[in-house]
Image (tube, rainbow, N blue to C red; front, top):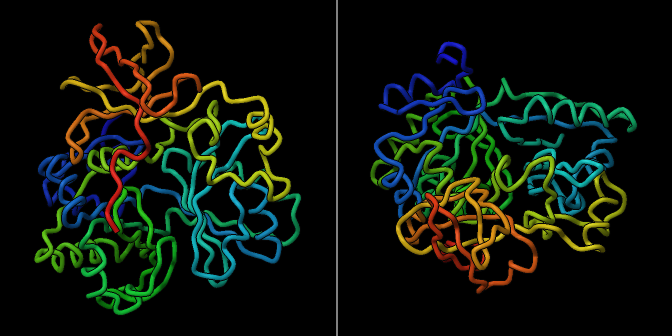
Length: 368
């Protein structure tokens, strides 16, 4: 596939101007890195980084039937969004328990905004559309092409963003949402992210996205801001123990198997996938996702076998150098009998076993 055939975000020209190395990601021409993944990763952990995540999908759900419909199609409990300007992490679950996608639901003043993974936009749209008909007064809109999304992440994200949007930042709790202006640009923003750090995901009109990008980079210079690509986004989310669809979640893996039981509310009433998840809870899981600290310098990668006493028992779902924590890390699926924290396992890397230990999730947790 050539670059000309790939979709591009409104910031593609800015990325090329800034010297980004571009790659094909889910059919999008996206920056994988600028100067280096390590430098970008450390900037987010220590200072602040700026990501273009405009390839993500956005749907709006409105109408009197929207709450009942969403409560049926997500695994978490929508009643947690007890008032406007709140957000919730959740999943779409198939009747057999597999995961259609994971997403964030924002309750806004007049509608709900769903943010879904770039690789699943069409699938997710078909999923919600196919189930909306059983509910009265539900309006769905796919606003993905009308929405650009930037992520400002790191310890200095809040003071930098406060300079642009004002005092509201001080009172904005994690997973809260607000609207305002940044340098005269109308924005919506949630105190959410995918890095394990404090930060904001900022919704903006595509025509103003490049202007906002340049504004954030310019005002962020005193804070040590770095433009960041998908490479650092992946290493950051892995250190933070956050799942990536196609790795820790897919249509053959349930949220319970991925260690996301905290976001599944089986007691809320009927929802898609509930019966299958109840069976898994009752009968026991056949596989579970664990975090592994791997010894040595060789890096674990997706698909590498996980061994117990020299015998294969599972496989790595994601692996990399833990850039901030300082050792190789992996997430992997293993049987429950091998999942206890402290369990001694190994990862087969280039035909040699590298000792690995099951550790608590996440590898990295920011101090608050």
